[in-house]
Image (tube, rainbow, N blue to C red; front, side):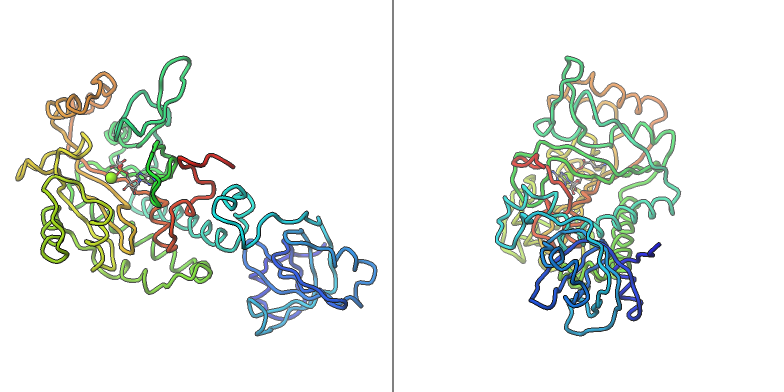
Length: 431
Ligand code: 4AD
Ligand code: MG
């Protein structure tokens, strides 16, 4: 039996006999020769077939179209002109399937590429992104396992809200109204009393009506929750995680970053430098004094304002202590300044905005009930949550991270949609 190796391993071998298999990435031919760029999950390589060696098979070889599946054997050697620096002189080919005309070409607009997403995943760009995405997921698990965390899962179908009512997806639950989860957090807070240090990677749903380059209707949120810690300790975890993810990607995905044209120098400061920490009040001051932008105290920072704030930084920046009134109900008042909440957003450079949000959690039962009511929530929906404050309530904190937003930033993408294989947005549910 032929022993097939990956294209990348063949390139590493660099000389001698090799057998590889995959798909036709590019093809061109003449009367006497056929050039095929073969693609597998690892890389691409140029292969050349001479007609004189394949008289019987030539008709099929000549008719090979893009994405046809084939097995090849031949001699590999260095060739500086070939796209990845090597070429295989093929002496045996086994055609698995001759593909129909491939419906993707460079003239397709974004909409048509979106319709053909299931095929577009095979592009070098998407393959590179999906590999980096896999590294990011792995790095998250690795980071928390190394710190003695437990992985904990919360339900996806829930009876009521948590973050924002208007962005809840409603589902028919045996004739009753139920919703798709927007966050793992509230159930995680309950589980924290059993496990103390927990994290998750989970699909999260938000009926976002905004068509921005940062919002998905379904995304993978990484969340964590820890007993007995305060905001500063929480930010240490957050910074450690981002640094770990970046280290892993730079170590494991050099080739993919190169394919994406991403300059590693842009990523290095995030590993090397400490992330600045500024308060919301300080952010307003910087915007006023340095950027000539005046913001009324209490207003959320808008996209342009975050962008201006971040333009002088090459690492993410923690912005802490936002006005309490605009915040989710579980973010506690700062005892030193009751107008603000003990919370942070982590804003990423290069126009990437909020990649994480976290806070200490309010342990004051009356304050929680008051805030929930003021936001029009039904207290019954939160009775399990309020129980956590009745029995052995302790200080604790946690954050959530938009995994696709981090991938978008690492890969230098224009839109978060390309950070996930099959994006779900207001305008797209297919394929
Ligand atoms: O800031 P958010 O809404 O915070 C929470 O859900 C908390 N319960 C997290 C926690 O403390 N456990 O969402 C967290 C992060 C945001 O910072 C953002 O990066 C990402 O999730 N995010 C989205 N990513 C893609 N598409 C969307 N529609 C997103 N909404 C939030
Ligand atoms: Mg947020």
